[in-house]
Image (cartoon, rainbow, N blue to C red):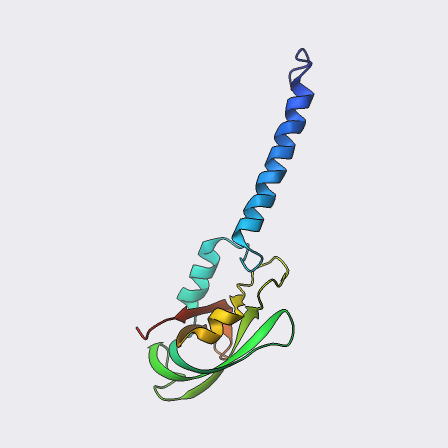
Length: 145
C-alpha cells in the first residue's frame, strides 16, 4: 500500500469486498452440489477404479433426508474394466444424492440431483475393490454407450 496515497486504504477495502462478492457469486452459480476438489482428483479416481460398469437403472431408492445416499439398483449392461462384475448381474450402488433446494456441505462429494438420477435410464459407475462408488464417481447416461 502506498503511504503517500490517502485513497489507498479505501481502494484496498473495495477490492477485498469485490473479491468476496465475486467468490460468493461463483459459489452460488456452481450450486451447492458442486464439489470443491480439483478436476484431476476425480479423473485419477476414475482412472484408478478397480471396476467400471454401465448399468440399466431399474430403481432409485431416495434418501429421506435433503441429501445423503440414494440406492441405485440395476442390471450390468457392460463391463468396461475389471473382472468382479459380469453382464446381466444385478447390482445395488450407493450414490450421493441431493433433493432440489438441499444445501449439502461443501467438500469433495459430487451429489447427484435426485430428480435427474431417478429419470436416468443408464449409469456408469466407477467402483473400488469393495464395490463402492469411488469418490462419488457415478455418471448418469440417457442412453447405453
